[in-house]
Image (cartoon, rainbow, N blue to C red; front, side, top):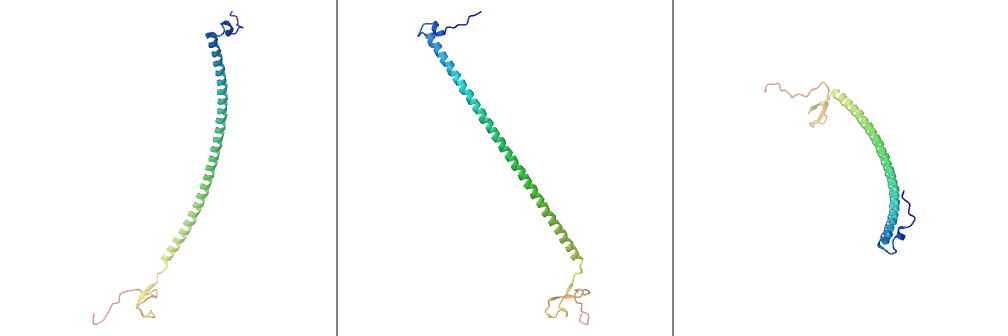
Length: 145
């Protein structure tokens, strides 16, 4: 078995020797590496905490956006229902108008007589004639024809 050394390496060689300087430098480097490692570890912990907080914030923002989208969909549904109601009202009105037009088309149309004695002013204005009258060209019957 190998015995554990209890004497520091710097006491083995002569004081101020190159080996002592190298060993001292290696000790300083090792101490610096330990401090750097501790700083790096602290930085990583802080970065992880910041990342975790950022992810939570992003999730909260996504939740708010989803809530807004749900609200927009609800508004769209209400607008669509209102539009459908207006279209139904317009359709019913259109059906009534068409029915009235069809009814008007089936009524007898009054006929007008031009220049007739039925016109009180005799000015040639159009006037209503009885329903049995018709507008026809005058046919002259007589000796000059």
